[in-house]
Image (tube, rainbow, N blue to C red; front, side, top):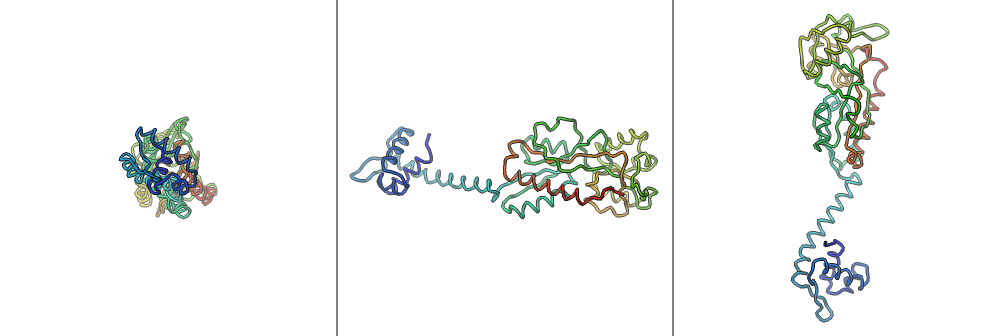
Length: 322
């Protein structure tokens, strides 16, 4: 095997014409240069130098190896510099996948802070909901996946996010907890439950007779499950996986919905009012990565900024919605 240090010695000998001159250039002794040249000739299995008077002359094999050494050593130098830049966060790339309400709330704040601190680090963003986002991570198509799971069976209607899994589903991943997100009811401003008094909370059963706006088929299934747990089957008049559309339909008085609080924060609910639901249904929002990726400086820095962004969201929330 040809070693880079031997190529550097060969190049110095070729440039200076002698072992002693090469040693002075490299900062080592003449015997050390001679020893390394013998090791290189042993590796390639042919002489690389012949003595001509007081100078050394390259053989044809030596000339060929010096010619290639220039490109090899330049490539190694470039690789070393690039790796050092990545390790020092002067460069690097992170592929991030997030669900929609995370993309509009947590991600912008986190990436702005990351760019300010480490302008050489580049982050790409793709949207996917769990479990697809987690599959992309395991398949090597992203470095960080924002995901969520409900603390217990149940969920919300309206909005295109559904991500329910059992204990142990992420045991092979590094899990960075970010935020606990509560589901809230969304009702028209003039609705009888829009102002619920000091408690600011309603039971989902109080909405049993209302027309409902639900989300995608998976979200619709979650809505039906929560409602059936409360003793009724919702009458679903509209279904859309677009949060602004849900808010617009509710604001126009066409029905009620249940959304994650993070989704409400990502859209101005004109004509609609968010009200706390009891009993509470919550989802845990996390950032996921692979164990080896967690050691990459750019990935670690991005996880830190996502955690800080989530902490700011948590601090800005009122004690109770409604």
